Length: 159
Image (tube, rainbow, N blue to C red):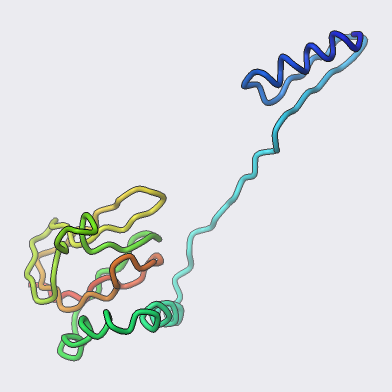
């Protein structure tokens, strides 16, 4: 293949969506690759560690001292109860939109299947529902706070 044909081949490949071209015959072999090699990122499942959750939860609470004070008032009476934990890593939202009312409030009784919050993960809004009829005793996370797998979202009292 002469240089003129090679230049034409390169131009054709670069003007198309082709990322790799390979031609092999008895006399020569031509390989044209464009762009970067795709980078694959592998992530393992998060490991739950009992000491990691309190350390993670304490840092954001210190950043916004005014908001935790409001939800911390009912907490002393609510130390007993079950926790509803985050099933995924993402961002916790109490309401369906920034200007909308929260799904639930402390002291509210909710039915099985009722939406309690949203955890956004990779631009997908995942509704977290009540697993049983219960009373919301404590809301453990602040709106728009990052949550890890297994982080407590709510303390509930089963009814």
